[in-house]
Length: 321
Image (cartoon, rainbow, N blue to C red; front, side):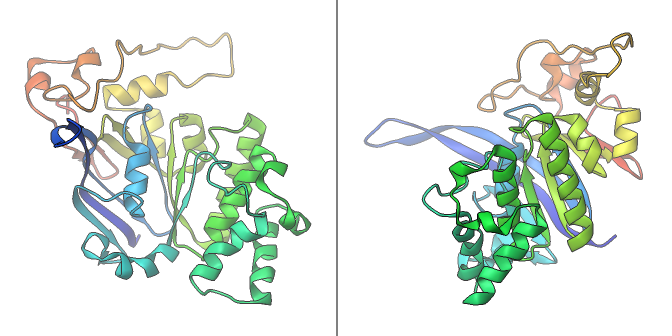
């Protein structure tokens, strides 16, 4: 498959400043620390991990909502990190973002029609009557009645607002959509509807997704490949079938063992993690996961493992392999 997006050595360090008048940078929050992956055309890549692992920051770096500290982001052969804001602007049409909280991402003073039409007008995709027709088509596409276009965000339910966010992301006919936990704030029944909608849109428009989530059940439903992130680093990348059948990294094993089974009599071995996720300001030496890992050795405490291929379909960053 042809690669749409290539990410190599991506880093994002947020400085912590000390002092008020003559502030100086003393430490850094290592939100994303040397992350590399790729997304192929028409593929859905899931990015999973605990809260604070750097998933959302990674997504925001791809569309330049945040500026990377270091690393390469290549979209369709173009190095976006070397571009100025003016040069990157045309690429914004091809890379769109769906936010976790649909209500806070919509301007409460704008009607739904204005919210969806705003990117269309800004990028000159359509004018006049064409904009109105385009908004109606988009609302139909995501399962909303175009007659509701004159309403305001507070007049919609959470699931409907997320459909509005999806319609706005589709407005410019993108090639890649970064979906940042788009169903985490929704009821389970509504989650299924939105996931099925995203699946249908992918087939209908030939979209690629970076699907960010913490719920592995949701990821299993939609994604073909899955990247597991822990404290700013990728620890495992694998195809869906391999990862759920035999997770390799101890952190992935803990995540998959926590997936609920719909049979109350079923017995399974749970991998219980000890402690909390460490601070990205002072990450542990060596493997970041070693303080919580039951298999940790002295090598794990001293040497940082690199993400290495173990076979054709998966890579893992663990000294056990």
